[in-house]
Length: 423
Image 1 (cartoon, rainbow, N blue to C red):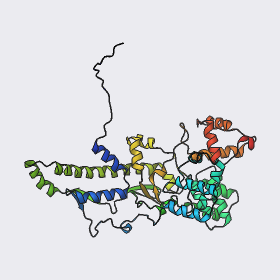
Image 2 (spheres, rainbow, N blue to C red):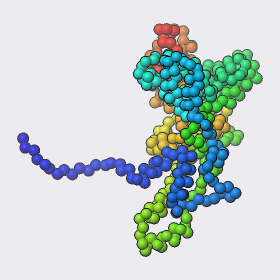
Image 3 (cartoon, rainbow, N blue to C red):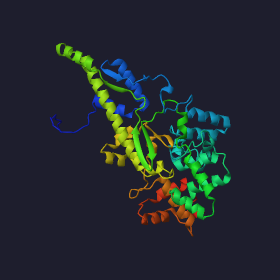
Image 4 (cartoon, rainbow, N blue to C red):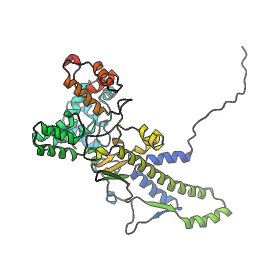
């Protein structure tokens, strides 16, 4: 069999990431603080970029006092939590589990890994109950209150438990958070009043729920200053969204220098100066595009979650990157980059923008993991004979949820409810 060499022409398509496109992607991912630092450094090295000075105020990045909405701390959240764990003098296994959980917290203090994932991280040395026990009885007792939460309701519950409140107020608050079938606070209030509870106690519990910090870990953010890009306000049940322009440097092309150098460049081409001019124009247009895109994404997220920002902190709707991308005609990867390290100033405090996205566990209906757990809990609490996870799945699928049995099993275990055999 002879071997021969032949020429073959083949047409293919491939995505080419140009240096300019890569720079634009990198810029999109920067937090507001990082972006301001980059602008300042570019002003220093590029003579064609000029900063518009604000009247009676010279913007300088020198210390945290320059910002109205920054949160900084002398030690990181992780350092603070590890110090508390060390002081508790736990046994070796408990310490290992606690440290693994701490390493799985994001900057807001939320546990971003499932307990099943933590089992894998620790090479299945510990079971589900052992890990959850440390989470509930150790991590949830650390300061700041609310650390280690898996959803906003749990974050609120942890803080309510830690507060110095009458036990009856705590019981009512827990009832509102975990026992009610509705997320509508007005309906919950009416239901509890009809059960004979004091309306003043109910109002007190609701007030305590609304006053909880939904991002407790941000008070210990160390590596970066936390500065929101977007601010929202509610007036007469209307949501208003603004891009935060406070202390954000306004930059422009130095037209005088550009005109004078333009004449020189026509006579004597200079590649380095031409690149500086191009870089200056790119930076100005890219910063504007970045800010406009963040505002559009943030505004849409806030409109979708208006109930959560209003008088109902229990209500958060399923929302994904894909949904936002489709409505704004953007690629989902662009949405992911925009949400990286972006913060929003809300009536509930400064929050990570991405924390307002909650995926639906059903492909046919919008239902958050928290809502599904409530549905499972309601079915089990009302059952006359223990129902298997498969029967619960069938019952919910008749309502149009299209859920697998393993999904029911997963969230039943999160509720720490026994299987039908053990109920």
